[in-house]
Image 1 (cartoon, rainbow, N blue to C red):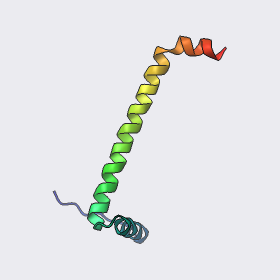
Image 2: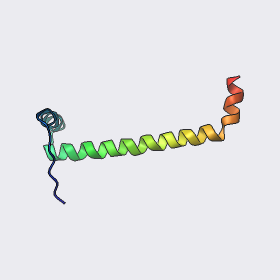
Image 3: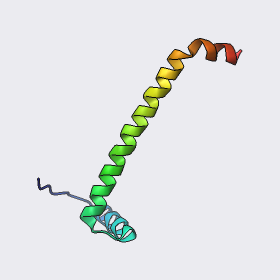
Image 4: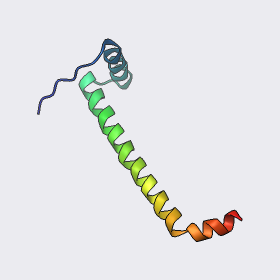
Length: 67
């Protein structure tokens, strides 16, 4: 599937710098950035969910420890 990515001049420069620093094409740098951002988001959401589950499960114990 083809997609056109419209960037401002500043975004274009940032992408070019990223690609150069990684030694890859701008297309590859954009793909990597998107993939890494998606992985971080999923990982962060999972950590938040596990934290909520732990707080719910051990709420009584946490309250007693806080006293």
